Image (cartoon, rainbow over the protein chains, first blue to last red):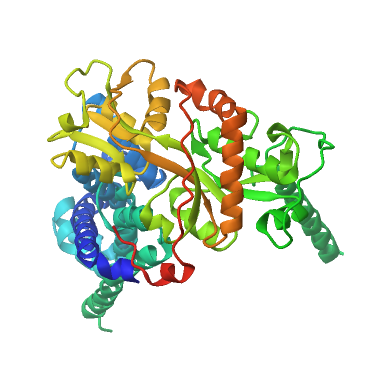
Length: 214
Length: 315
């Protein structure tokens, strides 16, 4: 455990990088996901089509492949961002598909009568979506969205393959320089837990808070 | 009836799976040689590692499976090839008798990546590690090293058109790529403190980053860069400004002095009779390296085993 204690500042720095990656990517993924879920239930066919293509294409490709493709492939056609920005772009685009599907499932739990009532009152589609359906949809999918968030904490480890100095990057680095992989990766795992466990508790608390009291 | 058939089917499935495992050759055993030479095997002191391995008829060696020139799986034959592999065969031949080319399946190879070399030696998964394994003081506290059998020099790779980088000090203030946690990254930082390092998990990604202009140079041991240069179709070149000595050693279990001495003796014999040089020409020679003079083996005094457990080894 000396290895971990001696490198505590490095572990804390790396934990902050992982936390930053996760939080920024999740906020972007929520935006993308909500928008795409709206696309997928919209009455406009091309929008539904666009949403479906995006979700099916990105969700069914391994994250590692997407990251490598974006950083090493897209660079060649002129799309070039820093490695850190690239990690956030790919993580949020990928996670956005899961958010979209989760939110869409939430939308489907809202009774059709709600939408019919809203339309008969003269609300436009976007008014009915944002004022009537989504607020009810989100409350029923807090738990699955929480799972998406926790999955994102762990998925962010793949950013270490493109030179982002997060917890996994530090793990590889210290393993090679100290030759003590077990202690080092137990340390990494501990700091991932430190991020994921409180997130789980916060999600549980939030879920109870917004639950419909029957 | 239905149930009996189901059981029968699953038995067949199990048998098929077992068959598939048996033939897949996961351990990377080197085939060939065929006939075992009828030479008399050397005799060793009872209880020594050499005697134990000889009685077992097999030595397990940790090598790299992805390092061109040193230890790499040949995609066509599935054999592991390279200079490290040749060293393993030389030592195998010294234990079992006969020629290095004829040791066949008596020398079996296990993939060792940088992170598992020490654990593999400590828990006995392998009998020795020959995997571009740089001898340093940190590692000496955990394992014992025979050799060095090769001195690698860290060099710089740039685009073929680059004329600005001539030595390591020219890397100050430049974006340079190396691999996470490697000694190469530490070394370049020491010689060019203002270097701006980008660290990936593999050198092929560094080569990509160089091609994309995200970095202006890649630095690590010359043989590895040589491999990248040779596959770049003339896009990259070696600066040929070596700035470190990386002695590659053969890792053995901590405290096994008799075995370490034996490996050192074997290396010195191979230096003297030309086996070392011919192994070099067959492997690293093919990726453009000139055969150097073999480095003298370092029979250093090892630290006691008990010290390793308590000493902090963080750099």
